[in-house]
Amino acid sequence: MNEPIPVSRAVDGGTAKLMPDLDRPRAWLLTVEGAPQSYVDLDDPGHLEFEYARRIAHVLDAAADPGAPLDVLHLGGGALTLPRYLAAARPGSHQVVIEADRGLLELVAGHLPLPSGAGITVRPGDARTALEAAPEGSADVIVADVFGGSRVPAHLTSVEYVRAAARALRPGGWYVANLADGAPFAFLRSQLATYRTAFAHLALIAEPSVLRGRRFGNAVLVASESEPPVAVLARRTAADAFPARVEYGEALERFMGGAAPVRDEDATPSPEPPDGAFSVG
Image (cartoon, rainbow, N blue to C red; front, side):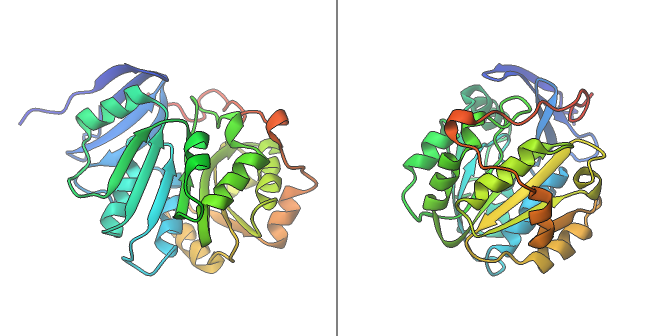
């Protein structure tokens, strides 16, 4: 049997590479410009290598009764790790994925094809444009994992964007976003204040070392009009290989401090990660 070989391709965002995991026969790591974007095990879509992906999956697991199908809008596709996970965990779900990088979509479709009947529709396009065009109340969950390089684009950080997300969700629906920041957390605090303008409840999931400002890292934001199952999420994230903490309520308000919401005219991308924060190999 031939060993899988790495694949390198020029895509819209730079150079994308698919690197095989030699410990798992049909698993691949996707990087763009050296930054890890996705990890997919074609034989086991339930295997989530990245900690932030597991934290988002915990939210998806808690979004409805076990196995019940969901209508999910994914902003940002990568190698479609979470759509594959949800299709396996909740058969019959209807998922739409919006990915701006057409070259990346072609690479993934050619080398990591979706299983037939997965219920996943992949469309090229801008995340905000697609969100604003989504029918009102059409999604149970919106998952946002959009990075231009290693930064969240500015037009996905504003009050206007957040209101579009709230409009697209059904009553009781959840918005989940992968963000990244480090001390003094100017970006993350402003994002919390921005989401507070459209959602009654916010929660933040991250490793304690990130929340304490010891290092730059991912933070998963959960926003909803209804109270999230904080205790369930706290138990699940605490049991991960790299345990996380769920900030909610008064603790999150203290973390937010006096941060102000961001409007379109003032929006900026998330901060550039320090050298080596997310790079591989």
